[in-house]
Picture 1 (spheres, rainbow, N blue to C red):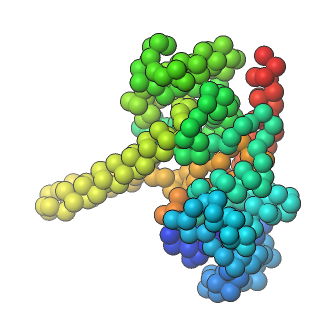
Picture 2: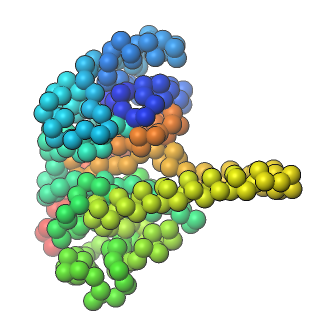
Length: 334
């Protein structure tokens, strides 16, 4: 199996990205990597990590980088030699089995859609992310790819989310909820009412409507919404988590007794941090395109990159896209 990694993407690239590859190779030496980016910079970093002559690593030169603030479509047109564009070309030519980047999300979505195309019966791809909760983890989809959803998009997200929950998270019969302003079938917009009707009549394990308060509970395994709402929830929850841990650290340092108590609760704090730490699941999944595409957080650490690679490997191994195609065919055939 061979994975292409955008070494130029992310806040602390290329160091963090290559360090993540190193961590993964220490545990899984059989996977091969194509590191895409400025060749000179990559080789300098590989030498620092004593990976320059590693037979599992090859380098693909990319002379341009799509920055975080650039317009995705404009950047892809003007920067045909960017690391993201070249990486997608490798996937399109079946030279790699998966691609991963912590760079510009919009550029990743646009490049994957234009170059890899969508799977049969999928109109637009969506981004699925894992939401940590006190009870485990839920899937939230979409979190930014499609802000102006039609009913068919949300139904397709339900199929894709179910597939990920079952194949990647090992949930046998994942339940699906439609994010709404109330639990009753009559609540919501015309769009959510239409989607509710379609999902209710399907063979999916459809729970019904769920509210914002259900995002961090064990009410359902998969929560479906449009990209605007999903992205807002994701960013707000990340900000809240950081704020809580920041306040906790500040309060602990206020007195000797607080610090002593914190020392005694060190194990509990570590467990809590791990439960809600986005590094544990590494990256979001761009589903619905003809390839395996992982989009990591811009602030990803080496551990997050390592775990994102693990997810990519599992998606390839489980043939997730083939399963999505089968389930879409079953849905369309009634």
